[in-house]
Image 1 (spheres, helix red, strand yellow):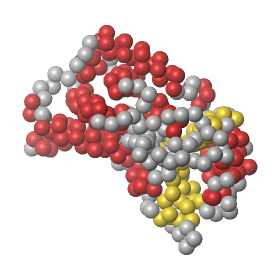
Image 2 (image 1 turned 120 degrees about the vertical axis):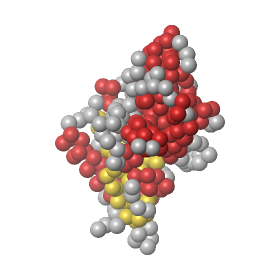
Image 3 (image 1 turned 90 degrees about the horizontal axis):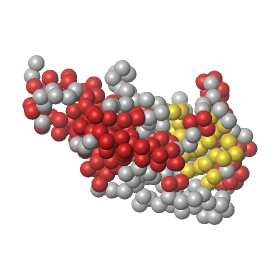
Image 4 (image 1 turned 135 degrees about the vertical axis):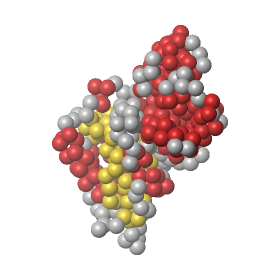
Length: 321
């Protein structure tokens, strides 16, 4: 076996979890893929000097985390609209902010072909709400919380990985947990219904959009539902406000303007929406990630970015066949 083959065999099985780790740190699946490539490049360059004092996994996480910390220094955090201001009245004009580096969804399709046993990507650790909440933390706090609470590495190992002390890690973790608790909804609020009930609700959700039925959609929403639509800075809170805004949207003018294709994003059900053009062709329009709870839909985040469809393994045009 050559050195190259040995290296590939040794590190290749960690690609999926490193991709999820970089996504949690950066909030962008596209950037995460670039940073995993940078991680492997740095690992290859230093491979001959790897003496096995730590596990290969820890060694790769050390490189990946440092790559992420460097990348975060170059730009601002990736928020959702609710992280930049309060909700708006549905009667005011919406404001776009394309210059903001918005949080992006993580397509589960990126992990297709990965060994499930090797991809330790917990559902809670990559949910959209959790990754959005991480953006409120400093880069170092983000790293400490992910390494300790998501990857469950011992404090001493995290300290060694970050080049700090166990005391500093424990102190940073307490502060990060306290800050995260203020930004993240309580777990009981996000408790999901049983699988059959969830599937039925998702089918009704998609049908309401495809049939342009705002009343049917409103029945599925919690009273405190929020609607966010990056790159729009404007967002709405409350069932009445969300329903009023959607009722005024052109996509709800007539039935059949949207086709909702089920996908998985951030380990949760989502939809890729195709919009019908005057020619009759359905083109990539937006990716919608609803947060489904036992008491209804608590949040809808719609990413108006057709470029995301490729990362979900979807074509730019919808073929009804």
